[in-house]
Image 1 (tube, rainbow, N blue to C red):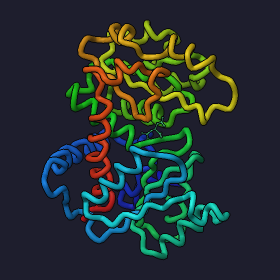
Image 2: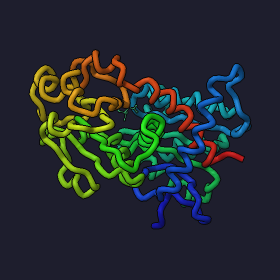
Image 3: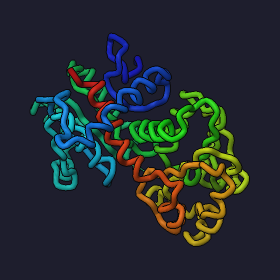
Image 4: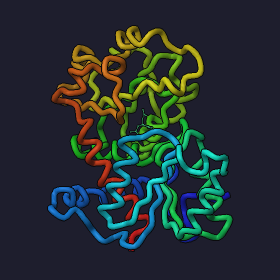
Length: 319
Ligand code: NCD
């Protein structure tokens, strides 16, 4: 099967993963997002680029930031947004995912924003739409299992570019529960595609997927060593809900070794920025003094996320 993200003209039809996207496509999305940050500062925070379009937010897993920022982004583009409350929807009565999708297509959906615990659910929907000839409908992956979270990866790249300008000579460290993290996978894909020369992954051995070096990263099992002289520290949440067994000691012990404290952050470059996709586990992977400190750009990430999601949605479906 051909790349399900591209339509027959080779244009982006869906955003399912960042893996394999050309650098120009990623750069174009980041460039496209920049003017949307200004829309947020206007009294009337609206542009008519998606006027009359129906967007369905299908979140089969919990979310605060991602669901809300997708909704705000769609509304700022003048789309009509419907949030399906999955816990009270018919999937809770046993309806299949694709039956749900077919019913929403019968309501003339133009776009689905999908979060699902199963890796591959958004791809499945995209293939189903293609197989049934509904190729005017777009799918955006808002996080699937451990697989990918492409808009998070993109908003992270936007944030890095905002503070560091250029990707060409950066050292970036991704720290924590890489094994269960779709965010880490999308970040690594984006950083390597954009040509960041030094991408480090810092994690306990039990939370590192085997063969991760093949993605073009260096691995560290010692946080102090890994953080030395980096420009960007990207923290990950400990994904307790995805851990099958006891991969870790207690949260207190994790914090002692792997928590980002001011003392460990001091090993990075003086002007290093600290990022986190949220939700934060304060006192587990990050100390409050760091999360609320001068180097943290965690809340700007959220704000930039709206502009980046506006860019993706308008590039996929805008007039
Ligand atoms: C992440 C997610 O759900 O993948 N959060 C987010 O989208 N901002 C990361 C996480 O849950 O740890």
